[in-house]
Image 1 (cartoon, rainbow, N blue to C red):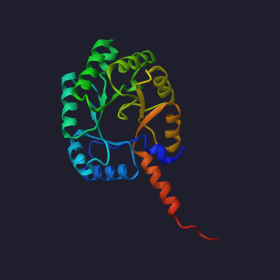
Image 2: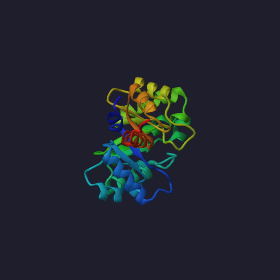
Image 3: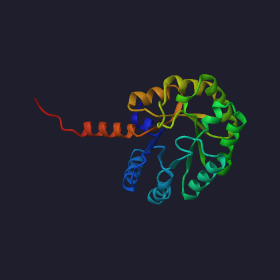
Length: 227
């Protein structure tokens, strides 16, 4: 697979709690240069990033991140505020506590509250697969499919595990055709990216693929030494 095609699926991500405005601008520069799908950044940096990139790049941010146990009203407010500040895409975290309690109607309402708060934005729903049973994953594929969200996403990258091939395969096979899959967390190589895309992921949340592209560029630019 061509590296450019892989980069076009990437939400180039920086969500460290101590990331600086300078680092976010650098991330945006890289996202533009390598034609990434978006940059995924903390909500506090959205307004500045949008001013910086204008229409050159999509801005994605996270809601209810990383634990997802905020109230639905708080998540909805966060989403609306992010859109007001210039976010084009919203990645929200479900309430895993509700899942574990079997409160499926409440889980659905939580997602729909965010959907209603950002009706014009692309919405991705993070289900945090590493914390779920297979039965819970299957149930969530159905709930997300009915929520109006465009994507179901594996992971925050901040819990005890990230994307796995088995989870991406399960999500693709059990989500409605109109719901796309985003793999995130632990995607560290071009090989990883190719595998997840081959299994049906149409977005990748990662900081490493752009670095891989830069390493390939540097290798290509290195002078050949004569022996």
